[in-house]
Every structure is written in structure tokens, then in C-alpha cells.
Length: 121
Image (cartoon, rainbow, N blue to C red; front, side):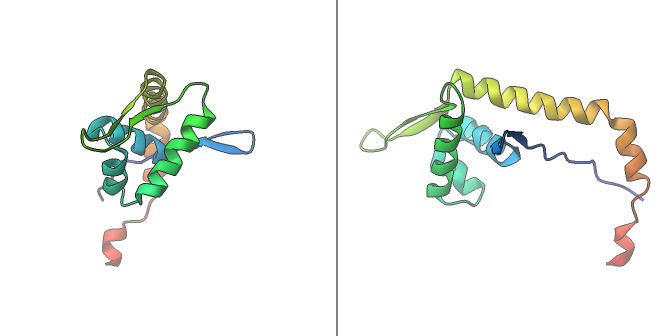
């Protein structure tokens, strides 16, 4: 039986607020890669309004904004991660990778207990 690698969906909750998780991390990475909030949202199959709402939520949750945006128009708009945004994204991704790497043996033990689901198809 071949078991696909485990994925970790880590959500950071401070107090009663979800501040950062896999969706926001993916949104930031796509904004970084595309230079656009709308393109990042489309890639995640989310509305422009929802993407903007998440950006505003992140920007207000941290001491410094994570995303800088320029309105569209004749010259076109765009968005980019701020230094703080790049730092938060890098730290989050490093934490997820570290947890997965540090727990490789534990994950293998859990994976070894999984049923072969390919037989059920």
C-alpha cells in the first residue's frame, strides 16, 4: 500500500481569534507569486471580495500590514507582500515544515495504521 505524504493544516489562534492558517498562507503566497489580490483569489476559487476581506483581516491583525496594494486604473494595480508579510509567511511555512520533519517517525506510525482505501473503489 502506498500512502500519500501527510499534510498539516496548522491554524494559529491567539485568544479567540484565528490569526493565521493554511488558507491565509496560500493567499499570501499567491499574492507574492502573482502580484495581484484578484489573481490570487481566482487561483483559490474565491471571490475578489473574500480575498480582499482576508487581506484586510490580516493587515489589521498584525502590527504592520502584510500586503501592500495599489489601486487599478489606467496604469494597472497590483499587490505585494510587505517585509512583514514575507516574514510571517516564511515563519509559518518553516514551522509547518519543521513539524512535519520532526515528526516523521510518528507520522509513519500513524500512516501504517491506515486502511488501504484503493481497495474500496
